Structure formats: C-alpha cells, structure tokens
Length: 229
Length: 245
Image (cartoon, rainbow over all chains, first blue to last red; front, side, top):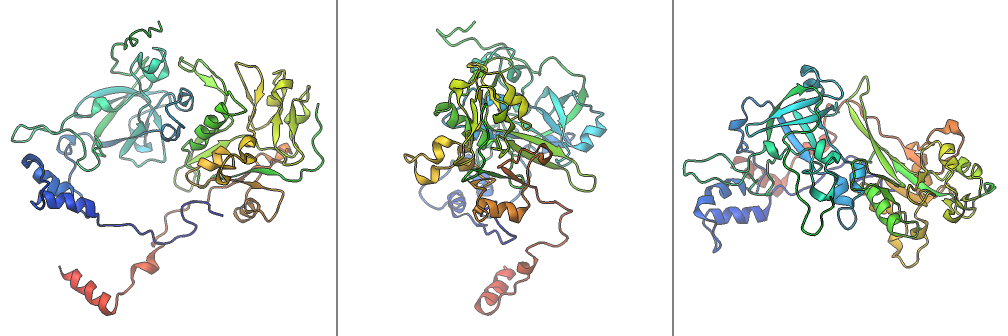
C-alpha cells in the first residue's frame, strides 16, 4: 500500500535540460521570427539557460549589511480550499508570525511574545515573531497572504489579519535597481514571474510587544451600496 | 441511552501516517467543504468575519515543533478526528440515545433529531473529537463520510472519506480494520501502527503510523551504488568525448 511518493531509496530522474527554455534563449541569440525587445535581449540570454544556472540575485549588491534571507510561503490550505476562498479558512490560520531560527532567537535576546523590527534595503516593518528550531540559521520566514488591510475582505477592522497579520511586501522593492540606461525593470524573476524570488535580505531587532503591526494604512471603505458599518 | 454493539461485522476507519503528513490542511478543507454542503451540514461558523471566528470542523491538524535531545529539530503534524472506537464512551454516556455505533461497519454517528446538546459526549471523549454546533446546539462529528463511502452515484474512486481522497501525500488510508488481511490492517502491522491513548481503553478503530526515526544524515549517499557507474562501449566513448568539451 502506497505510503508516500517513494517506497524505498531509488533514483529520482528529472530533466536537467529544458527545451522550452532553450527556445527562448535561441530567440535572444537572434534565431527565429519572434524576437525579444533589444533592451531585454541580454537578460533573456542569461536567464533562459536550458541547464541549471546560478547568478547573483539582481538585488544582491544592495543586501550587504542584511545578513538574513527572508522567505514567504502561501498557506497550503488556501490552495486546497474547495471552490474558492471560504470564510472559514481564517479559522485555520488567522494570523502569522515571523519565524526565527535558534541562532537569531538567542543572539537577538528574543522571548515568547516579542515582536521585531524587520529592515530591508527597501523598508521596515514591525511584526510578531516566534522561534522555530527546524530552520536554517540564516533564514527567517512567514506565511504569506494572511495580512489584510483594515476593512478589506469584509473583515472586522480589528480582525487579527489586520492587526497582527502582516506581509513582507513593504520590504520588497517594486523595481530592480537602476541600470546605466535609466530603465527600471519590475522586480520579478524573468522565468517564473515571481517577485523577490529568494533574494530578499533583511535584519531583525527585538521589540517589546506592540499593539498592531506596522505599517498601517487607512481603513478601506465599504464598496458602494454595501456599507456594513 | 444506547448500548454498544457486541460485534461489528466491519470496523471501518482510517490509518493516518504521521511520517508522510506534511500538515498542508488539505484534509481539513476537504472535510469541511464536503460535510458543510452535504447531508451532515451545515457545519456552522460564528462570527466568520469577526475578530474571533469559530466553527465546526470534524477534522483538525495540529503542528508541533519537536527538538530531540540527540537529533535534528522536526515538525510533527498531527491530524485529529473521531477514531470510531470499539468501546466508545461518547455512546454509552449519551442520555437520549442520540449517539450510537453501527453494528454493520462500526461507524459512530449522532442522530441530531434526538440530540439535546448537553455536551456529555464531548466530556466523555478523550480525543476532543466531538464538535458542538454553536448555532443549532447539537453535537456533530466525523461520519467517516458515510454519505460518500456507500454512495453509488459517485464514481467508485470517490467512495472514500473526503479527507483521504484529497490527501496529496497518501497519508490517510481508509479500510476495514476488522479484516487482518485488508491493506490497512497490513499497513498497521508493517509500520507499527498504534492506538492513541490506549490507557483510556476506548479501543479506537483509527490507527496512527509513527514518524520514522530521523537520525543524523547518512555519511554516504543512498544512491552511492549508482553514482560510480562506468559507461562502456559506445556510451563510454560518448561520455569521454563529452567530458572533453
């Protein structure tokens, strides 16, 4: 009876070479009718390598002085929800914490209930934190998509999603750093389209418990003809 | 008050694998999605958009951090639902007979029409598996998707509890635990499946498979025998040629 993806240690075969990626790269090299804009040609040639490749993340230079990597993961329960977003999903996960590895937790003098100021080259947030031992010592993470602006989603303005839930978006630049020609590209991975794809760098400092996360924005008004207040 | 059946022809239940469960909550959402809209619904919620929402879930998954003294830190995910016990204290404690256990398949159910919402069964259940409906004032619980498993209008593959049907890692197995030759019984025997809280003498039908012990990472790759394969003949010639470029 199957008890997982694999029953025993065995080779896991996967394709190292991606032909669709090579086709994009060939276009960047000048082959074929469909050609990328000149301004993107060099970037596509690097990014669309059909073999596994590593190059420094585009925001890496600005990350000096920010020793931790920050990641988010969308809660799986949101993907699994039948049909659509059910209101009861928030009972499964209605608030989030920034999880800190043991080394950061100890060196920062954190205790249960503490908050932290999290700073990146782009911005700063104040959020609740929690200790997670099963985490590598250079990474902090949190659940994505829990934080909601006050008044959004039809939630009570004091709902935990608005007061204690948070996003890392305020730490992430919308644009990549300027280049010589002045053009600013969206901070999105050219292959996956993901923003801040494993390149967000932060530092954290301990804070006393706060009343609400920061930054806060004005409460969203009710949609027309649907004023709940 | 109902007596428990002397004998159940089948003991239908779940075998839950704590080794492969990743805590993704797919079973939780599938369970509430099915049962909220099915014959057992609604699974009401209170203040669903408010500051402290609460509601009925037949199945919940709790995630725990474990730091063994001599090993790597782990997350253990623990799914929790009715265990359909052979000696179910929730049945014998019920003053109106609303709570009962079926002799044919061992499923424990609540007849909501007879339930007065006194909550005694929730006190009697050591597993916290009973769920008081806060709107209708009746007790609800996992039905083992009794409206799926015998439902001939569903494709055969779907005639299992919604939680097991949806589990992406194959961590929930449904079957007859009275039959020692059934796949679920063999799985329990092979993997050291165990009763939750056996000291409570409830004789639960559902079984849990323990997480496999995670020692230090192996010094050599498990795939080592496959890593030093030497190509010969034409493949060997190609391998040498490609190695030069």
